[in-house]
Amino acid sequence: MAAGTPLSAKNATVRINTTFVWYAAEWRVRPQADALDFSNFEGAGFRNWIAGLLQLQATISGWQDVGLNTYEGDHDIVAGAVLPNMRLYYQSAAGPHWALTSVFIEDIEETSRVEDLVRYTTNVRAKGTWVYPTGNL
Image 1 (tube, rainbow, N blue to C red):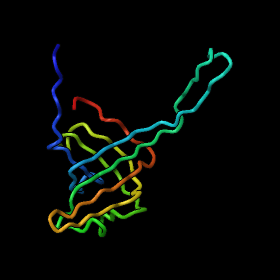
Image 2: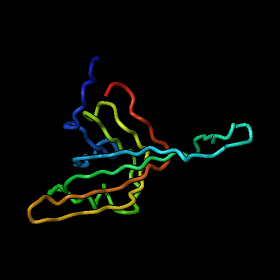
Image 3: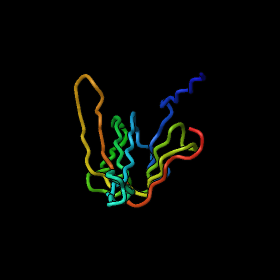
Image 4: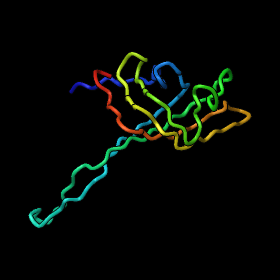
C-alpha cells in the first residue's frame, strides 16, 4: 500500500491585507458548524442533524519582531481589533491557503522569559466569509 507524502510546514506563512508579514511559527484553524437538531417521529429513534451557522477560529503563535511593534501602526494587532484579508498559507504566499475576509482579534497572550524569545499566541475569529484551501497542498 502506498503511503502519502507528509507536508512540511517550514514554508508556511501568515499575511494580513496581502502584504503585512506576521511572523509566526504555528497556526491552527478550527472550522465549525452549529449542529441543528431536526430529529422527528420518522427518524426510527435516531437523531438527525443539519448544519447551521458556520464559524472559523484560528490560533496563531510566534515571536515578536524586534524591528516592528505589531500593537501599533497599520497592523494594530490588539484585542478587539478587526483586521482585513488574513491568509494562512501552507507553503508560500502564492499557494493554497485559508482565506479569511476579515478577523476579529479575540485575545493575545504574550510571554517574555529570560532564556527564550518574546513569544505571542493570538486567537482570532473569522468575521463573515472564509474559504477552505483549494488545489494541491
